[in-house]
Image 1 (cartoon, rainbow, N blue to C red):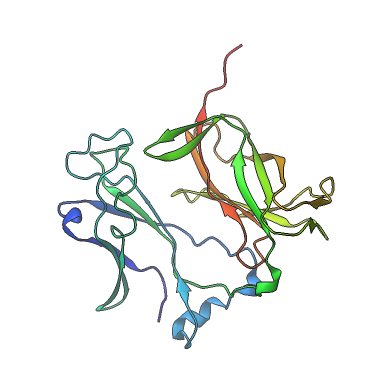
Image 2 (spheres, helix red, strand yellow):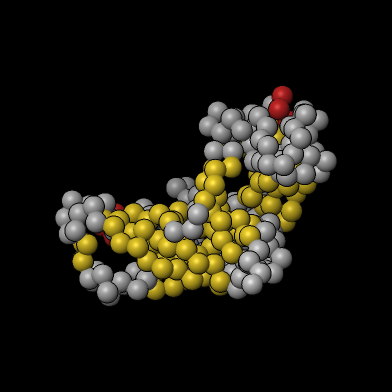
Length: 257
């Protein structure tokens, strides 16, 4: 029975002496409910069915880490307690040798955890769109090997999406697909995923490997106090293997006139 949230801890020498805090965050509603089993199915998970839990991990401070965005060696694994006396260990350091950046070395690491949810069913392979997306437009910097875009603070986040036909044939839009914007963060005030319709009519068709740029203006939650924003941008989430990107933005004050 997978009801509620799992217990979470770290394992390995890198976790020795580490402190962490668990934040209980609500589960984001899945955008297409018809692809998801009812929550009650988690009380007795049938063979072949799967469950998923979301975590958001930040501020990992290893010994001697001075903070300021520096990174430390990750723990060996994150351990999920799924039932009394039963746990699952997910290796971390094998794939990600460095943990999240350290912004506050004197504070505990923070793990935001959602409740268990049924894993959505996969759309049929034939629904796949041969389109690839990437964020472009704003200036950017490299921070610990991660590209961070710079944007002016304001009620809207402005950027461009590069849409590329990754297929071998000309792609013609039969209808304009939906795209999804899902802000990520530990705060429960973050809005739920918001769906928009791509303005594809001026494009019509795209030759193989052709790229078009689309201007985006997304309402920004908490823009008056936020200093950084992370979100998922996903194209046609109802299709198989949808293209998506997860940019990070640093918000800088507007220039005074």
